[in-house]
Amino acid sequence: MRQTNQTQVTEFLLLGLSDDQHTQELLFTLFLGVYLATVLGNLLLMFLIQADSQLHTPMYFFLCNLSLADLCFSTNVVPQALAHLLSRRKVISFTRCAAQLLLFLIFGCTQCALLAVMACDRQVAICNPLHYPSTMTWRVCIQLAAGSWTSGILVSVVDTTFTLRLPYQGSNNIAHFFCEAPAILILASTDTHTSEMVIFLMGIVILLIPVSLILVSYGRIIVTVVRMRSTEGKLKAFSTCGSHLVVVILFYGSGIVTYMTPKSYKEQEKLVSVFYAMVTPMLNPLIYSLRNKDVKGALRKVATRNFPCRLGVFH
Image 1 (cartoon, rainbow, N blue to C red):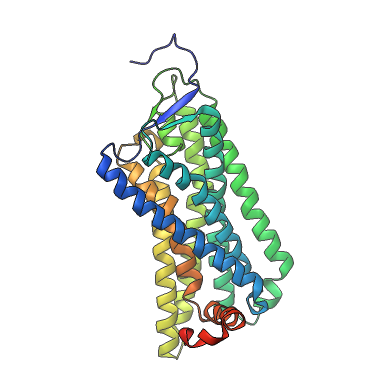
Image 2 (spheres, rainbow, N blue to C red):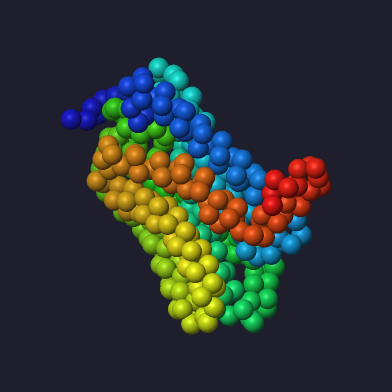
């Protein structure tokens, strides 16, 4: 039963993924490796896009924005999670928790919008290549990127406001490794129905609508690819689409499970958060770019300028 005569909670205790010392040490090693790969992969991709003029195209412009969002998204969560894995007292102040929640949602929601924009960009490039230059002008690209960040900010402000406007006067134990709306809501000292419905509606806007656009875009791409005469072209396109869809399923699927069903939040759902908080920010630069021959070419150019005697390593 909730206590009603207590003062407002001023700090939260993050229970983490496990209270077993050995498990925490293993998780620290794993999360550190994933985070380093995320930082290096996304920084490298952004550097290559800026350094090579051949990558100054709409697709790589959106990828650069996605890498920035990925980097900030992961950095907002993982360093604190790593520190808490080595600490006995896993406490975070209410203010810091609110800031983490807001930033997490901003970068996460922006990723949702950017992935949809990127899918639409690929659809135009593959299905209507002759109209691509006139359709995806730099003005349009900047507007789409700005719209993605703006939508991410607006949705996150709404979700954060309706999560933290409630009184928290009972337990302060968050069954999670970072501050996330569904895990916080169950600690509220009053009815959470309105907040849950608002979060659900925002989920439709930033999760279901973008994932629907992505599926429609890739559906049209697949239809176009099937009509190709080149077998090699078909295999390459299907391989690329398949890897992209894996990221979409992991990111949107885990997000929908968590944010479209906040009232049914369970202990194991924090494990689902690992996929979109840590795994997809690491996979995105690998799947979307570093496998691409244009990016490999840019990497080779950089290596040639800086390490000419070791060029053979990249052949």
